[in-house]
Image 1 (cartoon, rainbow, N blue to C red):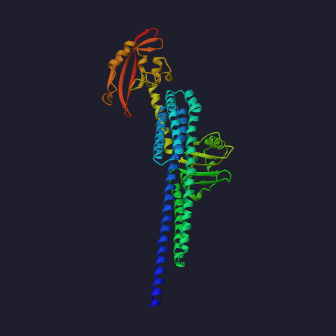
Image 2: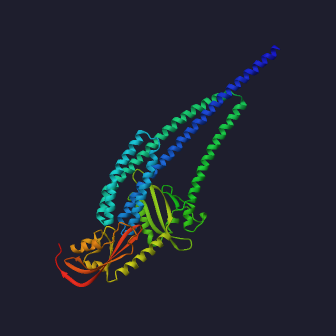
Image 3: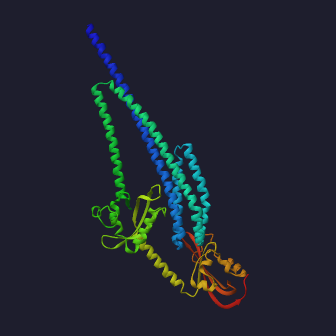
Length: 476
């Protein structure tokens, strides 16, 4: 009876000890999981914040490229389209910054974002002045604004965001190190408790740990799979060239753009160079070398590439190089986009515009188009001859400047009101014998005024036709 009682006490004791060990083990295990979850949450938050900062930095670079394009574009429609793209990039930048501000930021991060906001605020009037100058066609002013004022300030914005990214990395490493030490301490406690358990319990815990490691490896494998899938699914062809080892990677999409299966093109840089059209090869390679030698901020070129069927496709190549301390590129990666259809459409549009311009320049009547405020947007050859001016000297000026004082009153009296869109679209107003200032003469002309709505904006077409009355006089 006493022996039986002793065994009962031992059994109860071992049961209690086992329960304590299991409870402590469960607590240690739960704590380790909790720390891991916190670390994952912080890592995910850091990745998203870093992505938003990168988005801001990339937007600033794209806006700088867009400004360069605006400064060099002559066609007003293409320039207006690029201005719209410039503004949309700014919107994307603002959205990324707003989302980044929603994160819990340190004082140092707040200070860098505040500095970025101050610099960006100083940029806005420069952008407005630049765009106004570009619209006026003042190439010298746009180039001066871009090179001497905008680019240095834009670089300050990029440097500030780069400092923010560097700070994010430092803060993330500090958090990861802190939580790693915390997790290591938790693991030590966990393993110490496991040491008090039985061999079976230790085997079970070892199995759990091995499963966690396996899940981590699977997660890394999934990440690699996702990256590979993203590269395969991207519409642009991705390429990467390591100049130190001369190793090149062309994505399957890059090869597909040229009509090849993945195994039909080797990962050698000559596979790209030898397919460039002979008329484009020299300029393309020159731009590439300029960028690799640090003479351009971004590699951006449009050229033709030979397709597998022998035809040539237009492609848009964009890339950015990594540089060593001397500024020389040692690695460059970029994307290639097939723009053949867009290029053909643009060429077709340009030819159509040339035909329309040829027709307008061969009619006898002077044709002048203005916006709703009367500012001249275009005029044909006959209009320049009637007014005795160059087209470039009239763009942006108000059409009423060429009307004599009494004629201005008559023009305003019969002008079609632009305040109600669409109401007077297509309506004609004929003004007979209206006085027009043409250099040092006053010419009596018939004026036909027509209103139309284009892309939601009111436009006016002024058609001038000479009459027999011509009076010479000096204008004020």
